[in-house]
Image (cartoon, rainbow, N blue to C red):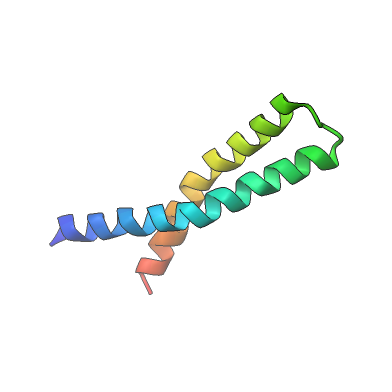
Length: 68
């Protein structure tokens, strides 16, 4: 039973990541462009940081949703 709950948590986390990851990556790109960082490296780094930050954020959101 606990194994099934973990599988559901992982699935919910992945669904949340598909939304949160793109959102935070986009926010990172917008922040980079706002700071006049138009070079490709700055934009890619900003998007990557947003995508990495989205992993724990997605897990926290999924955990809160599952407890409802």
